Length: 199
Image 1: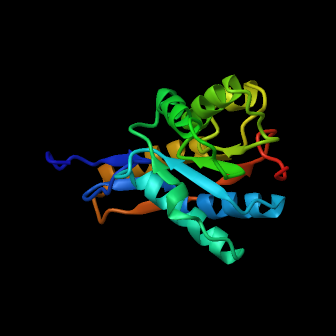
Image 2 (image 1 turned 135 degrees about the vertical axis):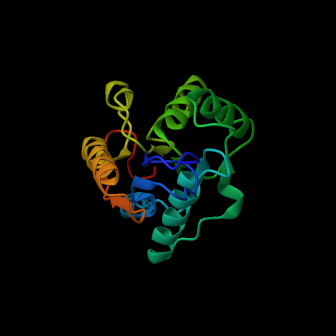
């Protein structure tokens, strides 16, 4: 960007200027998760995002909060947490801390799939059944989420379409530099076994 070369960024986790951006609709993703959990009957929902400064985490949290409000459910600020990173180890650490004391939420939405899988590992080590005691939702639809049991309910980004669009936009920017654009792609909710009605 500083060299003024044509630049396209795919799903940057920060605000970007002077470059084309291809990203998914994180806000709509949060809304979709909220409606899924509300449809199952959850009212006490917690959120554990990535780092607090993360654009993805803030947008997903905003969508979750708005979607719950549409269904008459308030996301209690005391049930909103942020992890030091998006890695599975941070999800393990969050689980270890939150499970030290009694908790009252029936569903947990995490900032991405790695955090969710880390949380699920520690929760199950503590004898907490998923989804019987806690429903868990992630974001990104990484392959591991479909292979483990219970399979992880998550949000899938159209990564192939986004990658194809990024390449096409780069070719266009090389041929005819112009005003920067932001391309936002819709997401899909992938429902697996980690979510169920609260017991």
